[in-house]
Amino acid sequence: MPITPLTKLEAVNQMLSAIGESPINTLGTGTSVDARLAEQILDETDRNVQLVGWHFNTEKEYPLSRAVDKTITLANNVVRVDVDNDLYPSINVVQRGLKLYDLKGHTYEFNQDLKGEVIYLLSFEELPGAAKQYITARAARIFQDRVLGATDTARGLMMDEANALALLREADNDTGDFSIFDSYDVAKTIFR
Image (cartoon, rainbow, N blue to C red; front, side, top):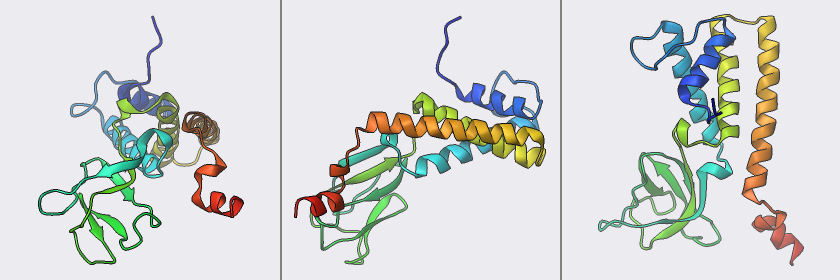
């Protein structure tokens, strides 16, 4: 049997095995209370991890186009957006619901299209393998802690979580092609 990427069902089953429960065949209604709780904790952990903003869910210099009414509406899976203060010194944007708001101008209306850094909340299936592994390991530890409380198993789950986080950071650094020169502050200091 070929090895395939981790699915959400497999992640929930890993969480269930962390507390000694049997695996399930489907997600959603009709499953045990523990399975529904595991899925809920997986979703909660998934959102919390992605809110940080990783290379895989962050788009830089993303075009933020105005509608006819001069407002900028964001996609429903945008969790954070910001624009460069050096490029747009007269505005300070924040996300309010699915719209951009200018704190300096006290308005939802913009006089120009913008470009900014946008962080998206991706579905579990869209995530890279290292992110899925970390989210699953972290969710399993949280699930085990909420259901069973502190046990010897928790120590092993904490080590699994730490290892998975290290792999995620390594994968993010490898795919991100980061450089100290990407930072405006560093470049400004070096090239003054």
